[in-house]
Image (cartoon, rainbow over all chains, first blue to last red; front, side, top):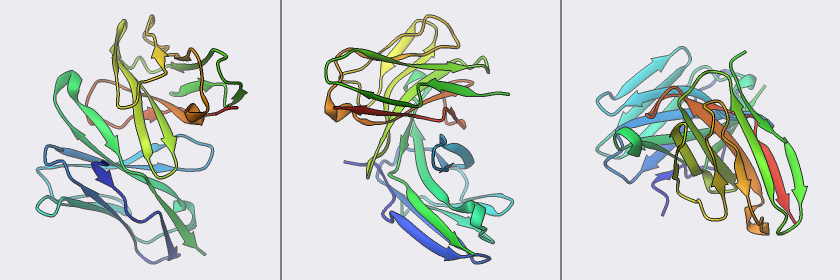
Length: 114
Length: 113
């Protein structure tokens, strides 16, 4: 059973509009969340993260929101640009010391249309 | 340039023929890990290593081996590959264990026929 779920395999958005990518998790022990971006033929690259003690983290055009009661997080991209077209993975972390690991979702393909 | 280098990028092999995928990082990272990416399943961890000579199983370790004899290298070994190991593999490294941004390699597309 997947502990981190991205229920939308794909999303298309017009350039300049907002992109909202969603992620749900089931493990209440997760205390740190990350978003990765992946272009074809490249490895994932770290985009933005948020600790469970916060409900929002912003970095330029990218904002991550965390709703712990709903076990839901989302990534907002405003404004969306064609270069944002990529697969976005949500990841969650729990544990301590050597037991701390990342669990990834299945990814959402974002396409930003010019 | 700080990077994680995997080789080969593409590999087609036959069932049962032992193979090794190499991974090397030049950032002096302590933590290294292998993932496989499959459609609809995201990235699943195979093995990880917290430091030299310290390795441990991830979520899907069956059929794989790893070693960490030097800090910079973390090869993935398939002793007897099977078709269900056809996948896209990524090596990643991080300064330490924890929810930090991992640096990923570019991936190895493996096909076992």
